[in-house]
Image (cartoon, rainbow, N blue to C red; front, side, top):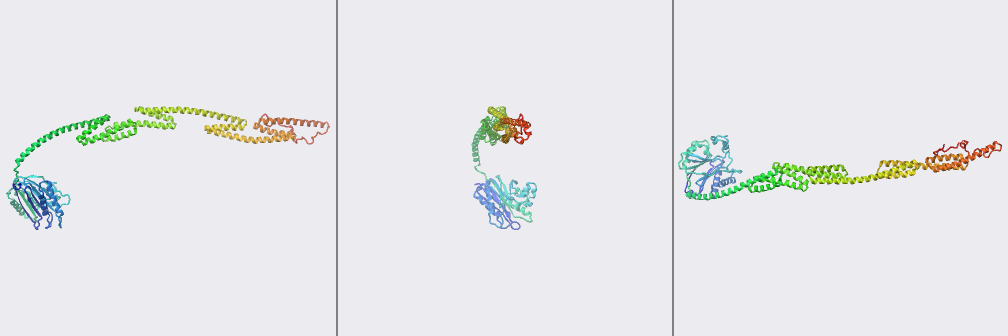
Length: 631
């Protein structure tokens, strides 16, 4: 119905170049509801190349299968044409520029890849025109090439979009353009626009009649009148929209549309009311969210983390309701900070100080995500926790010192722990320090009592050892070396119990001296006994002087040995010896007197003394000195 009630006339011309090559192609199809016009310009030099024809036929065929003015349909047609050229069996690579125009006899839309041009004339003036997809036109846009030099610029055929493109094929599809009666659409290849400028072409369409063939003929005459030396192939197409389609149901449709619009309007109003209510509620939630967010920050600043947790939780629910992603993230960071602080506080209350310290440090890290909020409080709690730990560290160190019997240093640590705990109002720590001090004082008291008892025992042992030493010295002085050795041995045992090395050495020296004296005394005693035996033998032989000499030698030894008993016995024997010696001397004197009186020589007078000793010995008997020595 659209085609029958509209008037769209088409005319075109397509001629080969001066060397008889024409690789342009134009084709169209006019259906009841849609019409499709496709013009292509083969970008190859081979006479037998059919890229333009293949492209046009493919695009028209795909369009005819499902006519539509949608962008999707037009891109589908152009991509199908591109694929056909890529997959075609040809000696050369097929390439072409293309322009596709689709109309529903009321509006039109075009699709473009390359440098084929479209112009829409209305009342003799250009209403719509395309821009070539070439490097030259990009340079024109950058003001590097003037517009009037495009037709001869060397990069005019250097295209960035064309059919036969293997990668990144992106055709340009226009928006829908409304048509009016007497509009004219012109499509033409490079052979035309390289030789006929825009102004001349516009003059032709200004004076155009309703006959498209006449317009085509006029343009071709204008082109040929230029008599270009190297005329290229060219194709020129005009589509006269003498009458566009008018929908007979337009009024009814408008009424229907208005009725529907009224219903839609009511629906819109209802929706608007609902949206307004929703928006109002949403705004209230947003306001509550902002309030909750602010309250959370203020509670944290006041170090009230219980209230901060409550406020943050409600704000998070509101943030989820209004889907405020930014607020959800920020409140999540605050929530993690609050949870870390509360967990650390609970650990601190339960006496888990090391765990609390680690959790407070984690909270300090979390504070970095909320611009350091609460960091002062956390650092303060960390310092307090460190003091708590310090109190128990001092108590532990004090316990170690007590085990090592370093009571004074242990007392210092306990006192320091007590002072630290009192300074931070740490009652448990202060009580623990006080208990440790009391235990220390009790242990010191018990230790002092034990040391006092040990000292008394030591003094008793020292006194006993000293007494033994004194008795040993007295016995040694008296010459009782056996007794001295017994006393010295007892003293040595005592000093060994006392672990007195110095006194042990002194006693050992005295024991050695006593032993030496005992050994020496035994030898002297044997010598003295030998003298006594010789004296008795001499006395038995009547040699009183010799006997007296040996007795004196024995007495000298016994006096040195301080053997008073034996010394007294020898003295008695010497007294007897003196008596017998005196008797002997008296008898000798009487005999001498008798001899002087003539009574004869006394018996034994010729031989001298009977003991054979010298007179000096008989006359000079020594005296015993008071200390027992011989005088």
